[in-house]
Length: 214
Length: 214
DNA sequence: TAGTGTGAAGTCTTTCACAGCA
DNA sequence: TGCTGTGAAAGACTTCACACTA
Image (cartoon, rainbow over all chains, first blue to last red; front, side, top):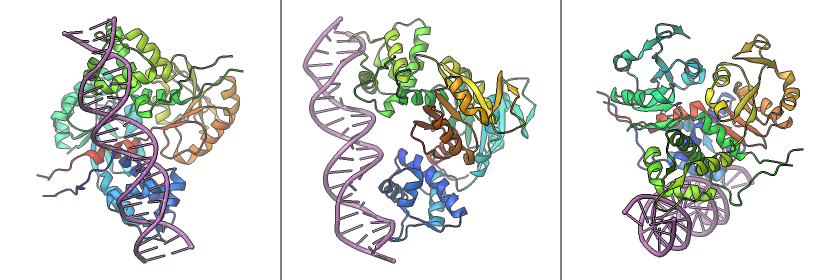
């Protein structure tokens, strides 16, 4: 029986989001031959203040050495375990439309241990087809295959109208986290992260300072 | 000369992000034949507290009527103008790879007035091809076409290695906002919103409560 | 009566600033 | 000297709670 490491103090969500950046950068630095990194040099590269970085790493219990900085190898290990990417996870993809197909072959997922091991769609024309090495399965097989393939997470890339139903089914077959691309809120018990493309564009549009036309 | 409406007090970013949700829901309610909405009924649908909603709408200067709620038509108008989607905007898409192609035909963008009017790629095999009605242009034509087509925003869907250079060029041809799908930070003066898919999955993975294996 | 609008309180997050350490 | 770790202060955001009102 494996008991997962749990921090006593939960890490603030804004911090978790920055940890991804730290991890990417730390890995790049290690690959570039560096051994240690200081909060101020990370700060320069990422645009996050050095105090913020020290505070964030403090939450993880990562200790640096005054005058030197943080050892990259230890830092990376700790970031990976906190983010839950210290092992592979099997992921299901629901929806083999345009977004689904873009995600199927997204190499960075595999590089982080997120393995898309099953792809589903309702469309009869797609079921049975092999796309990027994934044979599209009918939704009827969802429960069966989720269990069989030990799938922990799922990516929802179906139209908004179908998303809640899919989410409910996924939850009931024991999937424990959902990445949702459908533009709607899902009502489930398991954690959900929404990727809302329209919302992102709207956020951006709201930031544009309108200037007088010339 | 058009002078854009600017609020005296800037709206908190978390509020702006929720405004997208309010807008989507308000439009659905109007389409469903409703005329008004109360903060508590919106709250039930969106999982945002009613006090939060009232506070958020207060920032926009939207006034509701006690005992009744907010008039949907006025609410929608105000949300649209705050989010900058009260008019169409021409958008360039850089990168006609998988993600780019998924975005090209994303119907919700057009529905919100974001019109992809030019598509670029470095790949010679793609340049000249017509994908979903968009003829892929060579990057060499970037400056010329951005100007000609009155493009205000751009979507970066190129590999991380190329993203900074593309961003710098876009900025220098006067594009005033960037939606970035490349997994890296961009250093530019114009506003950027990042859509980081790996980061989103990591955030999700970090939220999964690990349980003992059976 | 059913709902708004908003001071005030509370909570969460960031930044400051500096003692202390290798 | 160069950098960490962290109290304390500041700031940002959310929630409470209730006077008010159509």
